[in-house]
Image (cartoon, rainbow, N blue to C red; front, side, top):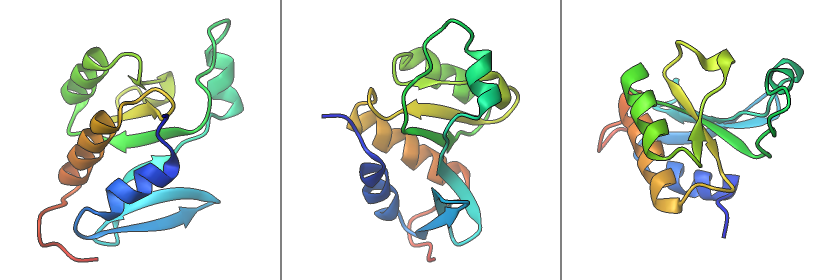
Amino acid sequence: MPATLDDVAAIALALPGVTEADRRGLRIWVVDGKRTFAWERPFSKADVKRFGDDPVPPDPILAVRVADENDKDALIATHPRALFTIPHFDGFAAVLVQLRLVPKKVLRDVLTDGWRCMGGRPGSTA
């Protein structure tokens, strides 16, 4: 069964100090009310154009912060079907997640790592 944004919410909101918010009609997850670590990320027209003849991954797509570019590259290499990037994210420490393809354990691990890299820690509060 594919992961959904509701699965993302359940995992993210179980982490200490996480709240969900709305940014321009899209769902985001924030650590301690100020640091976004995951967000719904539909493709812009420019993003779609850059795919050229390659198929555009279907929505929903989730963006999740990672520690750095090395971590990003390692995650994508380890889970190439579910995790990817686009030119818009070059030089930015985040991965894109195809929710329809990501195993829930991988989703949980990526979200937890994103939470940690944005300052999440056990016992933090919203």
